[in-house]
Structure formats: C-alpha cells, structure tokens
Image 1 (spheres, rainbow, N blue to C red):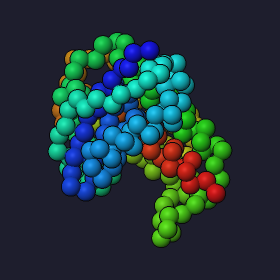
Image 2: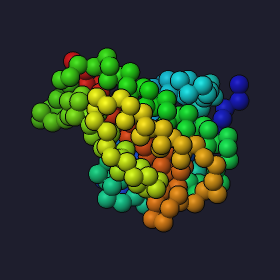
Image 3: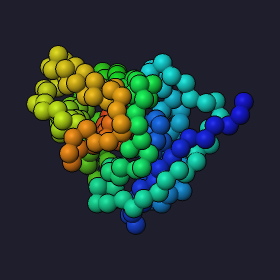
Length: 217
C-alpha cells in the first residue's frame, strides 16, 4: 500500500517540544527536541490506533510523519502541554472534519473511562514519590475540561467524579461545539478554534489515560 504522510506540527522550546498530528486529535507527544517528539509520536501509533478504531475510523497501514508547520512554543509547552494554535488549526472545518474530531474526542473519553475502570485507586508513584492516584487524576481531567469549555463559549461547573449524568452532559456540550462545521476561526473572542480545542482536550484525556495505564502496579 502507498505510504500516507501524517501532517505534524511542532511547537519548540529549549526545554521541551511537542509534535502533534494535525488531523488526528489527541495524537500529540513531547520530547526534548523536535526529532525526539516526532519519534515519540511515531512510537505511540499502536496506542493511538485503538482510539481511531473505537471512533470507527482507520489509520493508513503504513505511516510517515511529515512536518507541516513549526512555531515557537511558550511556557505551557515547556511545562508539558501543547499550547500553540497553528495556521492549520484555523482552516475551515467541514462537516466531515467536524464529525471526525468529535468521534475521536468521544473515543478518547471512552478509553479513559475503560482504563479507569480497570485501574486500582492507588497507582505506582514516580522515583521521588510524585504523581496523582486514579481518582485525583480523574478529578483533574474533569476540572480541566470545565476550564477548556470556557474557551468554547461554554459555562460548565466541573462535575463530580461519581456524577455520571453531569459528566455526560459536560462531554456532550463540548462534543457538540467540536462537532459543528465552521469557518475555522475562534469560537469566541479570545477563545479557541475547534481544531485546536479538539487536539488539546483529546491530548489531555489520552495523556492521563496512558499515564494511568503505565502506572498500574
């Protein structure tokens, strides 16, 4: 089969770089430099493929990472989260693209739920005893998503971890904005574009789902 390039955007700082697959929300990994970040992105292909499958989509059987855009990152990048909105994030969002983004984000949430259900409350700690346990990690994700929702024009109270109805309401509200076609501009003044929002929110969900998996005793 022919090799299909995966468009990758790089945000770069002296301390850390992020590589993000622009058309595949949640597929973002960090490294000490651009090559390391792209390498990490490639290494996570099998894990991300599970999200793609759950979303009812397909990745090419052979993948090549192709750098499409590179911009300087900021303090958030150096701290450990993708923060840059690229030119590609401002492109028009067709109904097909919107549906794809919403499906991948929804699949990421489902994956986190499944991992959490199979994980013990107490997770392995880092070499210095750091890191959140399962429930605190879930609380963090829910609180972050309520804050992210404000960048999409939504005002939502962070749901409690055991309030499944409220969690579903928050997710559906976010997914509805992500899943709407648009001209590609920010949803509101000083807000996020839906392409960037899908990338950032799905990355955060999967980053913690994978962390939870890796820290099981």
